[in-house]
Length: 286
Image (tube, rainbow, N blue to C red; front, side):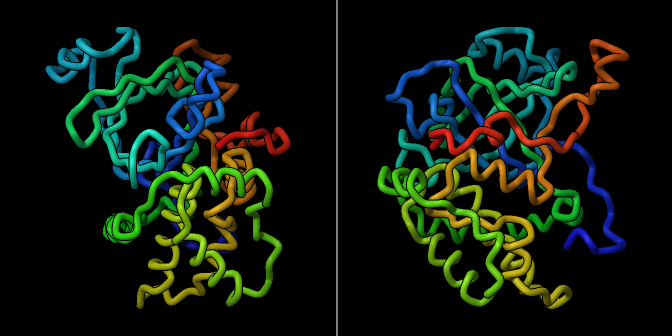
């Protein structure tokens, strides 16, 4: 499971469990810190393979009653998990989004929460970050389910103090070489009160630890964390998270330039490139 590994199958470029949505709202309302689309930005992790809803389906007819526009078909529906200031503990929901073929951009439409309520999303700019092929290939859904159960057992509310810590202290531990010490530190961070980035980081770190413990792999857990998600979960800004993900082989979904040149309806392709937000220097995104 390292970049030097051989014999690994290349995963499908489709959206899958463990991928990350980064949402920004066009509004500059400071009251939206820590919520989906708040002006400081927000990340959430996808937990399931998305299901596609076509415009001529019965479910589409139901969706039209709540969607703000009718030019976003097909709609993708997936299970997600996040930490948000607007809800206590872990927030799990079914998110609905549209992936535009012509430019690879994602439009978040809304969510169906666990109470069965539809929550529309304001106008937003969204990026889809896909896990490296080495992690997508052979993804263990049963381990991911265990991770969600483990995180639910110790869930805590979104924390302003963690947000402040993220502003003041770097989270990247990629240059650390004492693997035993860094593994203990990263695990301790899982238990701190979260912000949105905490959920993405802890999800993947917990998954990698479980993966390393499988009898058929028997790999070093700390090495996997340093390879794929070398961040402290209790102090990462979304900008730092995205920058480190780009460095570790995560890909932001966007349209390929060649495909766009050939056709206005070009198929979206995966290209590894840091987002503009990740390239900016520690902008305040929580």
